[in-house]
Length: 295
Image (spheres, helix red, strand yellow):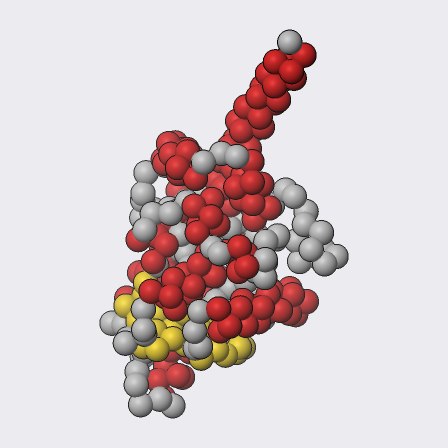
């Protein structure tokens, strides 16, 4: 079995790759695609250094695997091109793209809330990047890719714009696109907890790509995940809170993209709620300890 794992520098893709290497004997190809349409060179370079750290740690502590850094393709039908200049092909036809791209969708933010009105274009071109590099690898290899996996979690896959990924992928190929963390229904804190400490120390734990060294901002989704994990709240309780709040905030699972809410907002609100709850408990425990000591 041969698997293509698509990397970022964060916790989700890191745990997915760790589990794949640790729990299977599959031939693994990991790739980091540089999406220059959507991110600056500084941003991509910043994340890439953590990707290299992750790869080095996994090769040293788990097992060897193939790894490559590539520039993501610039599709001839890219939404950054005027409509009259777009060239479609037999795989990505005009009819397929019009299922996912129209005036209504232009104003839907990406599921992580950082790309503004480029969100739908980002999801579409990202999944095309996975497809493109799967084919490029297959062209130069006797053993073909059996399936492709990403680190998207259940909130992103079932509630966010990433649901586009699965649908578009099926329109392009019969090769399976796998989301192991979504299948395991793990929340953010549970994912963070499952990563070995040594691996945590080399991955990117803050969204602020302008930061100085490891001086984390303390207020982004990645930082809040770490703070909740270190607060003393059990992983089991964080999972329960995620479950209780997901439909309350995100709504029911729907195919109507105009109803999609930002998963980043959901993470922020839910993690802040957890942190507030646990810090209140910790203050009470500290107050009780001070009282009993005085007695």
